[in-house]
Length: 325
Image 1 (cartoon, rainbow, N blue to C red):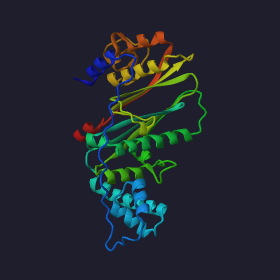
Image 2 (cartoon, rainbow, N blue to C red):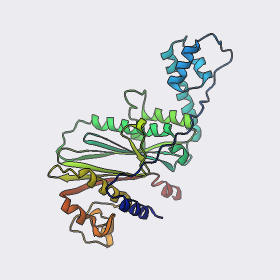
Image 3 (tube, rainbow, N blue to C red):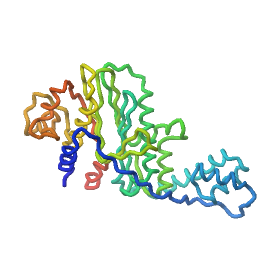
Image 4 (cartoon, helix red, strand yellow):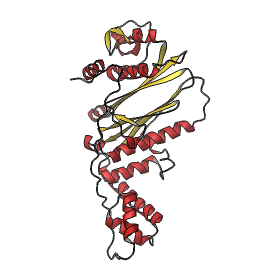
């Protein structure tokens, strides 16, 4: 069944409700493979310190013991040493895995106040995309993009929208609680999970009063540990202008996002566009996803909102075309 058909069946049956997120399946923690050298002294660190370091970092007994010996029993310095060793291993693995196809992964959606970001992070297999450590990487990328967007000092009279490519995204700071850049976090994740991964792209939208950003993620997954982050395989942001605050804006915005995901328009178009022909790629003249007997424009007009722009991400999109070329 095609994405469009599955969306229609799913959404008509559950109109007005949020998609049911599947429980995240956490894969067992992978073993870290950097090893301690010979001649370790069993008395170099206490059992209590060793257990605390293992709890804090998740690294193996051997590596935690080596870290405490190297750092003279200093717990904080031992954590830093372990992270540096993991970073070195991550960069080494990243270099070896470079070039391997990354067709799987996740779209991440994060909203804070008047700012919304959409990110895409790719990996090799769907199995790894379900791993909590990979999802935490997506979260870090979304937070890094959010911080970048919020740092832009612009006086908004209308909405603003921006995009970051892979190189720009990789260079962003990892955040206040992480050292280095997002590229460093990517290397750590590659070292832990053993697959090639890429920070593909990000989009952000900021809106002033009088505008609203509707959003939707298809195949949505959420976890309490990931806070407000929503994960899935498709994501859409729809920027609307409204003259008055409406109680049902969230519902309208979600339905518009569902339409963008399912119908994949290329532009907004106008209410004057006639259905059919080239207009089939224009959002407002497309058959409305939840009721194909009317156009999306005919659905929107009575709601008192105007659609002015949108962003659509599909996980892995463009990979097949690049492979063919």
